[in-house]
Image 1 (cartoon, rainbow, N blue to C red):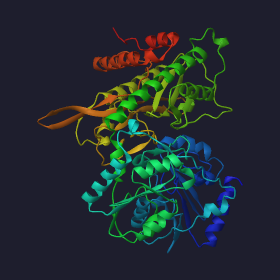
Image 2 (cartoon, one colour):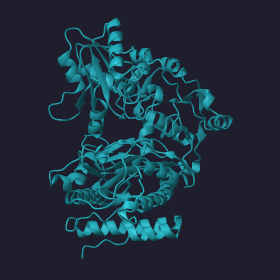
Image 3 (spheres, rainbow, N blue to C red):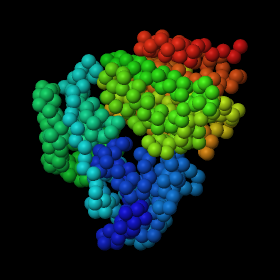
Image 4 (cartoon, helix red, strand yellow):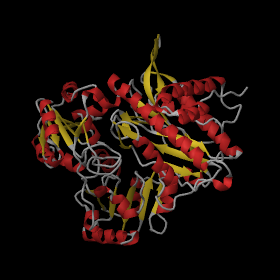
Length: 597
């Protein structure tokens, strides 16, 4: 079936169930950002492959809501489908709930699969859609998707204390202490990365996400791991038993939830409606205790992050030289430049990363985007038919890796030859935005919204902006996007705390022309204490040259230039031992001091 036929089949199912509308979110029972194959239902029904978006189908209309990262991609992928794109947060664009209220007539019924809808979203819909009946027991896509993939079941592996800095037993004790402080008797955890963090285990149930599809229940005496027992080796079983963890079948979480008494603490953003419906006890909602614990990395984790950054930085130096040797104007003779594609770059980078000790896998699908493709914020090149690199313009390369020592995420925008004056100025302003945030000093308790304005200011002053966040948290051998912190326009009431690892990634995108982004990871460290209180700053931990060739003189301040040169000195010092002579010479050239004098 094509997309139009699938939408028609869904409408027939809706009619049979007396539903006026049906909602298909981008989610699974654990609210993972990156989905296991069986739960890519929105992609199956719409053809849109972005990681965020919601499909709404009524008897007459179909719409897809997604954010600014995916506007261009969604426009391309929805062509001919009959599905209208609704650009979230743009002027005049209704929210999904507002659209529902305007479209549906008296006593309407809206269906969804409650196993993939978060409690938080469901309660918000209940409040906003008063008078509309929400039906949560209808998996209509499952009835249509006849060849739905089976879930992947990977073997769990142990992450030792030399990497975690804390035993599982210590972490469980911290959760129990926090439960006592909150006046709760138990907590159910649906976030797979939180379960893996708590119990010091990892897996590969979702590509690029080293997690296991699982739940956890912690109360005053028990720590239960709900998982398919085929995934637990004898070694892992013995390890967990010693840490005080009991293994139970995955589906047993629902019967155990029904037995709970007293007060149960839940994260409504990471608990699905179906699981919530099984709990008869009193509910208190808030951020998962484990999410707050894992966001601030301990000294052991941060030492390991530094090692991961050195390995990853070496791989990045190799790919930068490989690109320059093979696809830039520096190659010997324009006519002899090999036809290197965007996909060739992503494939070669994975090879270079795999040369690093203890590399596990990519932390997300590499964004290797040349020219106009880079204006599509989350563009991923196809193996066949991706753009060929030419000796002009920019290549945007956004990638990362999972190592036993931690997780990386880095973006570099690489000049391949002559650039327009506009491209150079945009690049310089993005670099200035990046350095401004890297230099920021801020008071304890500051949220990402305040820091976001610091990064955007150089662009705003010239009437420029970008439609994505400036920074996200990063897990330790866990998903590359980790909360609760965020540096963005969204008013998230979570302070940037000591030990948090966060990205610094401003950008600028000219549709149909080019895209620019520069990204490093930073960790929050103390900056000192004054009469006004405690102050923090960012320490950059990513190690890789930032190209200085496109910089337009006169834009960067001397302080910003000094910061760039100090960063490059550290990059050169720490990466040189990982490289052969040819790559060391290349690194020296790319990190030589920049001066406008």
